Length: 113
Image (cartoon, rainbow, N blue to C red; front, side, top):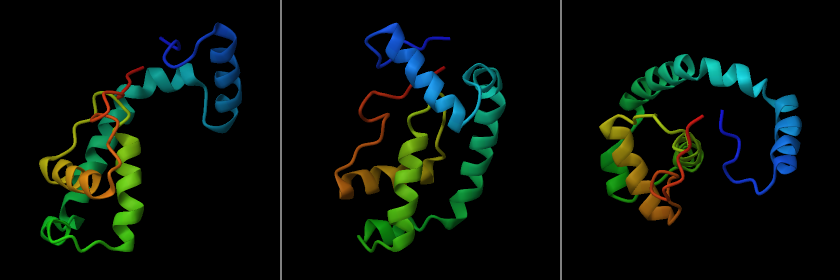
């Protein structure tokens, strides 16, 4: 597993790991489960499709749900290998342009374990 991304030293890497494993879970176990978790995420993204109103977003009519949803989807875009359905990707592109906050893919920063 490559923990070097974004850390200048081994001690910084270990410090991050120690702090965050207390909050989330064992990183090694999560890395092993990543393929199954990715499949679950893909399935959840498919369920989101009927709830995205692209016409409303294209008309620049935003709601509270968009303020909550776009950051969540943007966060997911940090995971390499996730494939957003076309409707969801279009939503993210429109929201990224409107908010001037790029996704991690747009920034070239999607990471894999």
